[in-house]
Image 1 (cartoon, rainbow over the protein chains, first blue to last red):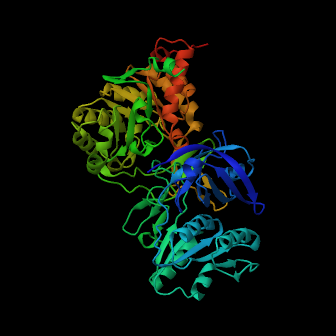
Image 2 (image 1 turned 60 degrees about the vertical axis):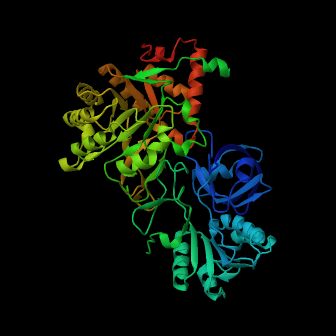
Image 3 (image 1 turned 90 degrees about the horizontal axis):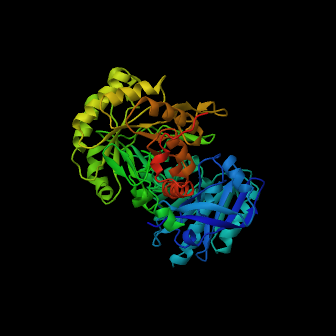
Length: 262
Length: 310
């Protein structure tokens, strides 16, 4: 498996809201081999503080040269990144982990929540190229229209039918993505590809279990290295013990995981 | 520059073991080395120390296991590992392909466990040395850590030495009143070298959830934040013992290495920095060669204990 540590230049910074940012990075080594669902580790500054890299899923690649990350400012690392300027360089490790496993023969459905929508754009793009059958369903949710709008537009550009949902009802369905899923006629042989907050993924997992649908989930955990050395990024698995999100995942078959339902 | 740097004498010795340079990787931060192959030319390192192995496999602690702190990180991995049998069957083959010395870090809950792992590893091809982690709690003795009681530290050292056919390094815990007492105890018990420091016990709390940041509540602090403490302990231990001292704690650059060697270290280990820059170890070898060239030293060994006191 090829991995690189690359100095990448920031080509473009887009600020969707006061705290949601998308960066486009010039990274030929990583962008040319990345697969949907894989991630990168980015150093957010040049000093020892904050010390560790931050993990980001790859939200899109283009021309085998550029890739994008989408993130929300949640702490010091993401805040530093949000304040970078176009033209600056970032140290990036990647592409890391095991991505989504696409099965073109099934009815595919991408389900994303908040920043978890990011890798699904890459997946949707790849599916529309790779699969000749009907395009995948796209069901995405976020807090507001402000957050969700630009992402829905990106899916629409790919020609994919999008079913949006917002917490405040400003865009699409007023409520949860699982409400939307229940209303769709997905047929008997559906495969879901899910990324979003834990409660959302756990709800989709239960829905899929009930319907006997396939369900791949992309797990988010804190991690120090992203390459299987620190053993910090564990996810409890059904057979006992743990899997490592960075090397066994981040995408898992939801049935292999041990879900903590509160 | 490259050829000039190539000619520099960076060789050091740990007991009977010759290293091409003093840069080792710290246990638990370098996996089984293979993980770093995409980033590092492993053959350029002084030695590799693989992650801690116990007699039986261990699942480790529940999440969250790590949290970032100021210029450092806390971990409570709980010694997750595949156990000695699977280690030998699955990991040794790649390690045997390395032409740098490989140290296997071992850990146990009882003296018998340490003895059994050392016995199992004795004679396994490709193992150049054993590093004994004595910082884990001794369950049978009511939770007293082997690393904090001199007699216990000595007993573990003696047990491992009796079974081992390769040099034995004992990795010391900094969570003691006087680390030199432990260092002398393991030296007297036959240790070929000591490595220090293991992580400093620490804690982090999330003020919003009012919960500890680690599921294990407390964890081990590593990274640049602990470097001054590590340097002080290396300095003290180097004066207290006559066996080689391997410095560990917040080391990333060649300058860091020079500081530890001046304080008395013969070799060093790079730990947490591997997470941030997977090439840190190889970068440090190059940086050290440049330093030796710039300073016009005959060999890197001139640095060992070369601190100029006021």
